[in-house]
Image 1 (tube, protein in one colour):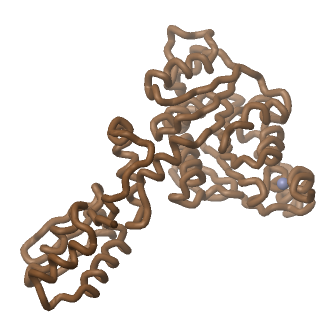
Image 2 (image 1 turned 90 degrees about the vertical axis):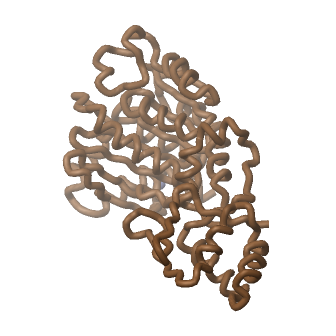
Image 3 (image 1 turned 135 degrees about the horizontal axis):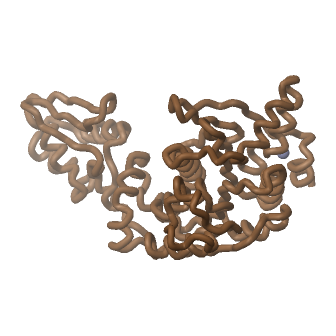
Length: 366
Ligand SMILES: [Zn+2]
């Protein structure tokens, strides 16, 4: 039985004979209520009453109001995204998880109606396994976001050791650990930050697509922020995610800009499809391709923490959209650029699946 309740994020005020719902510009609603019947109806939307209870109680006090009127009012409030169903309970989360992820749940509730459950979204995250390639500047910030969101199963891969020059942007580590392996330090730090995270680590330099496949085979989604070896890493990761059909979010810092894209093998084009699309489009492609190849290439490490944070946040939100469906990722089959100086984001190129793509075709034509 549905028990409607105003969401935690939706304040309801009574001002004279008016009811004000919500407080954000553009989504606040004002309802006139000359005889107090709406105020009474709203007082019953407290998560304790079923819809049938609400109808019965309102009609008892205001006999001229019909059940259709009340259903229609509830439908309007639900359509405005004001309501959630208090009867929906978590399936695996206990009190501890509900408290730890309280603000996540409030955020997810912004995307739900009476038919959905914010708990389902959080639990989906907790049950999803993510492979993260690279825990340097961008990767270490992404890892923190993943742990904060409640991804409890994360597989990280890196081979680097910590250096003094990393600390301008790599917030996960401590100076006392210079020269130690980043994967081991990340595991230690994350186990304190969120002990629920099952963090598997691989200390390895990627040398071929098979290395990537071995690392991601048990994961549902892949994030790639590894940048070495520069000329091959994107191709190897692409081949691996297409073969294993794992959705990918990939990105890197490019001086005053950040770039990211995502692909769903079989649905969007892959990295090779992108290259082909660029080559078919015009002559300036070589220049563009060179830019693409350098997306993850931090030759001079012109990366400051605040810029890295913007890109890390955007990429994790793209993953969140892919995993939960609460929002459509903007970067599916598109190269999105963030300008760190203007805060603008825009697509610099987009591509479809190419029938003649050597990577996609070999898999999907079988
Ligand atoms: Zn392709």
